Image 1 (cartoon, rainbow, N blue to C red):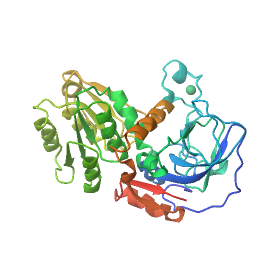
Image 2 (image 1 turned 90 degrees about the vertical axis):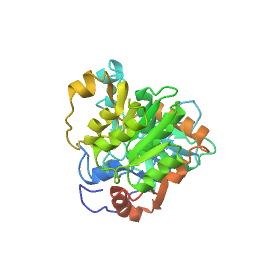
Image 3 (image 1 turned 180 degrees about the vertical axis):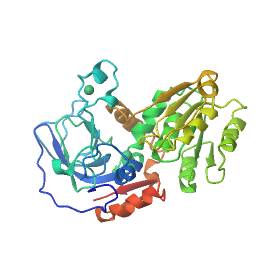
Length: 357
Ligand SMILES: [Zn+2]
Ligand SMILES: [Zn+2]
């Protein structure tokens, strides 16, 4: 991706060798997500174009630079099917890391396929091989999980996990998820696994809502059929004895959804904003009605830490028969079709789009 709104280019590189403590993997699959669409529109700050997109990926280990271990201490070996924490460079020694304990806000944090330039090497998943730099955390896929199981979750898996954890969903809660993209769908899954009795999804288009139903959601509301926010709020109140949901998770990307979502949450409930990864504009709310009088807890949720990816993967391995993540993959594309994949993702024609180089 050479720059905002420029056509994608195919480039050839020398085959990479791992640095000491690093690894090189042969890409099996990488995702195309909403972030890649935003990258292609130039909506993220400080992106060092040209970049190789694809932040969450998996592949087979070709070579390691000496002995490289996973977090459990086991050596990573050639042939292993692995993924990796796409974030690296979190320093562990700055104010954000040590005092605030907010690793996802560490100023040294970097992300494969987003803040890495193609001039630095194969640091993105839309490539036949990926260089894992020293310090990048490698996670073998648990046995029984295939590449497409994991990629059906993609970056939405740890992001949805983090949002649900941050929301503090409790046993028996009623949860509304705004947005039926991969983050919203994974939030709906993890809300159920965390003990929510009832989960509702508000979103569009139809195909994504059908996916939500297959994932055990009690009911879905189609934004395209119910265009007025007040009708959507009434739909939630109708299903919650007029009180609103215990927890609402915003995973829509639309600033207006935040005001609407605050109207869907009950008094003393919790609201988590995870869908505003790029600045899509402002929203106006009433501090009296939406916050103070409602006695609501309002939380932001930025990125995910290693722990979220690790535990999300454990849960995926355990619950893959109940939640069929692989079925969220609507279509796979070759590298040459990456432009088509981007455009189909932009128009929400797919739930999860995967590049298989
Ligand atoms: Zn730091
Ligand atoms: Zn993503």
